[in-house]
Image (cartoon, rainbow, N blue to C red; front, side, top):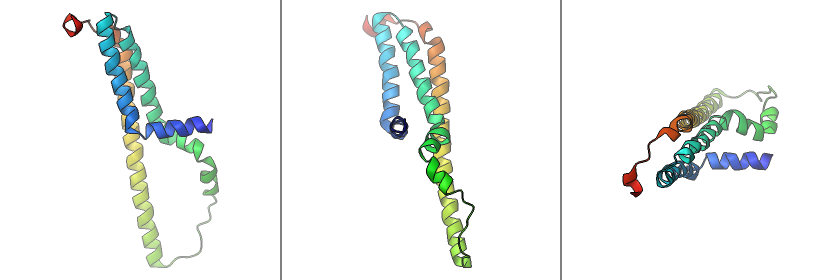
Length: 138
């Protein structure tokens, strides 16, 4: 199971996965136009939706699952020996910067997931109603 989650995490971190989902959706649109049946295009919305959902749970579920031992080990409550004021300021600044970067990554992933989920759901629901245009492959 961990191998599957590691694969998902790598795939979600890759721009290639976004390109694959978009190309798949566009290709299914043109194939639907060519075959005079937009049901394949509508079904491609499910793939976009699933990708969006996985993007949304990337930080909240997948990484927690993969890092649960490290998270538990870091949750001891021990803060370490007393630090000098300079060391405390430096550590606080480093931790704040790490938190900002992490928050930015989480928000970007969640917004991407929400966007793909919305677009995928709309395509899934209404894609079969897209008219077939004869001028594509007339």
